[in-house]
Length: 351
Image: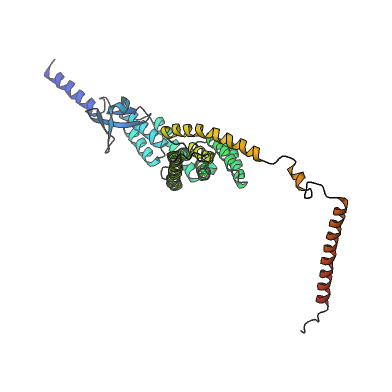
């Protein structure tokens, strides 16, 4: 090969690299065992740890958390990042990732699809009722009518059906969160259920102030409930232990034993409570049998109406009793008539 041809081949190769003929920049997608995925570049991997560069922020992970690592082109990385950010409700960041994908050479149709989804999400955020699907709107309106009738649990079911039909609508998510918060305060659902609804709302609107405020109040309320529950359990257990140590296990203690069992103590206390309950049950049955033996016979009430000596009152006694009642009635009537006469005989006051 002549020197001129050799230099021509070198220059052509350099030109191809400069113009993008080389393989595009690649990035990594790291997928965790819990389903999450992050896009960036592995910066370091040692000592059972992976340091992941996410474009200005480092993420350190344990290797046993990682399900796998995929190598993507820059276009694939930015498109995946845009989709993830869109799903998290971070619309500005998703739009920036679309711009980066476009600069890296993404097809216009790929970028347009994500940008259209971002625009639709912005519209839904501005007017969620207008963006609500018609079939979801029917359940939504029905839920509000049930709330007006204070049927909160039924309203929760209807709003849940609306959410299933339109899972990212902010109006539905906010109303469902308020309903679940009411049910939580009434003790009808657990904190975990309320947190699940709040997380769905925050996934669509990460900065939603109402969701953050309600969750903060609910967590404080839950902490207070747990403290009250612990105090009640400690008090009941102390009372039962004292009775046991003093040998004063009476059937009346069964109510405390059953109440403590219902509060869900740990296994060691529960086992001891079962033993105490087994000792008290025969005592309770014996006490119940004794109470029944002491109870008066069924004819006792009829006997109570008889005259002293066990005999029923005679006809003469009944007549005397009737005359006494009549005399009392007449006397009361006379006194009332005299009081009325005195009142009516008073002179009217001067004006």
